[in-house]
Image 1: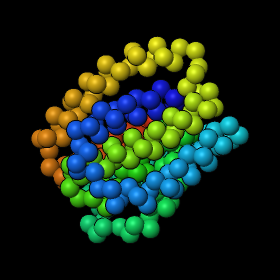
Image 2: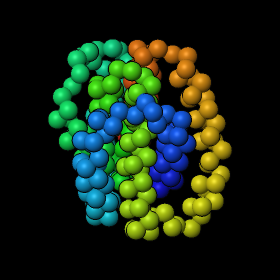
Image 3: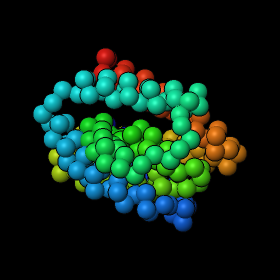
Length: 200
């Protein structure tokens, strides 16, 4: 999980430099304080609670929204900003527990932002800010100081860079509705990964 966190954070920084002008800061402001609270809660749970029930519950939740996106059965109306509260708490908690809090955030932002460039940039900006807090929390608890962590990070960075390049090329060639379907596929994949980790 610490490795995933570092890669997510690094990718967000790399992407943020190119997309900063498209960030919707009004959407980030309500997410950040609750995300920070969630990080603190997640680190506490990471130390004291079994992860399996949380993984399964989150996996099922993400699967439902992934199927909705893929089959285009979600509503077109923009959801209320009040959903930023449970989204931030869930995203921060999940991020601290499992290294990435992406699914709750992407579900929320994809129902708030319709422009694909704005969605991508805002998500990246969120991960840079909230991910930085998680990096600090993981350093404070020693999770990023494990033996072999630096070697694993250095080995994974070229793969991450290739993924960013391919993702950028794909982003330029697909429409906003196609982006939502792609998000659905990624959410379904994320849910399968979460449930697999819980049962493995």
